[in-house]
Length: 583
Ligand code: PEP
Ligand code: MG
Image (cartoon, rainbow, N blue to C red; front, side):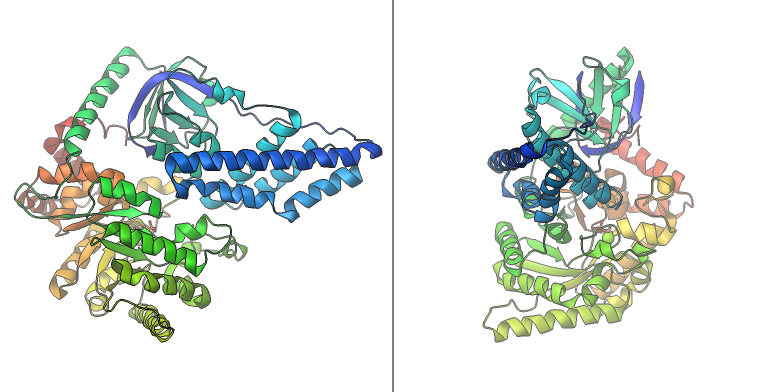
């Protein structure tokens, strides 16, 4: 038996036999093509490109029918690349002048481009590299007469293991046949992960070298909640996971009851959702969220080939507002920079990107682009209950400048005859220590706060949120971080400014009672976590939470804080005992 740890992407436990999708890269040998045959070779390249385009369009249509229009947009990047003369023309040129085969020239060109994207580091570019290799495979399939037989061989329930999956492969999987997925590479926000979780298959990614350790037919357990993969589990482990699965199923059943979220002593808690794309709203409404507490609008930019137009953005924002009806949509303006690069931005690397030109700073230095987004937001403002939020505000001056710009854009639109809602609440993320410490000052200018612990932790304890080597130091159980959260909540209570929390810890049940005990009455979290957090809230009283918060306030070690929080959680929810073992 061997236990591996990866990144949990889609929750659930699956146990079945392994099916290894071997994607070892095939090296295409260099062969010469006689001068007389080169035109024909170029024509076969063009036919392969046409066929690849047709297969992409078919996959796009399939994904659109199964999962909706937003995931289908993943294929637009592929289709756009195929039209890119700067990629395709040099391939033709090599065949023409060097006399290499179409397969060789295409493979070299696509791999060269993918390698350039891979070295850029950011997850968005790793996704692009994968898209490019997917395209290469499609073209080579055509040129070499191959088929994607291996995946088609999956006929009985399996756990699929692969180095990585293209979004197209992920989209072609069926939930009945693929019970779980384990990938060596990848991250939580990769396209393949997004598609697999949309289908609802438990998936763990970023597991490192695992393919060499598994053969087809081996027993395997995937825990998509805890991020654990167990190869050849012994009987005791199988029984443990079966118990855990039963407990989780029971808990899921009770958590599935949608309705108002009240503590056992009757206090209403707002449970809002964090979203990156409008397509997530359907799921968010199904779990009975009270609205959207964080709409990360930059993701539309990150997944588009070009800057989205004002009209495209207006379309998304107005659709989102209409879908939500009276429920609030807290739309965070562009949070680009740091680890979220667009192609244009990446051309100017910074030595300390997390301390550099990111978020509201980036927007204020790229006014034409920012104004286009603000125009789209304000044009949509009459379609529902809109709240606008600025990211990474560090000084009062910055907030004022952003708000003035928003007002200026509103005047411009009204002059043009557009209708713009009056009195739109304008708030800010509190995600740097300077904003948290000065919260009572910010409360004079901001209409609401949303505490972003993901960044607040890294800036408070000086730990890069994405660096595995210091990951153990990165925790919301830091007494310093918790004190800052308390400072912000107190300031907002004193000044009567609504406060919510939207960092990942808001969706982690370990912290739910503590957050309520610190005075928070609004949490914004990944929609899929809402039922669990709601069920937990229903079982606790505010007094119990306040007692826990007082106890935590007297502790000085992250480890002890975490242990006390976990023990308390298991006491309240014995069904999930064991789920936290692996963290
Ligand atoms: C945060 O920093 O806590 C946050 C919610 O924003 P993001 O994760 O997008 O940086
Ligand atoms: Mg942030």
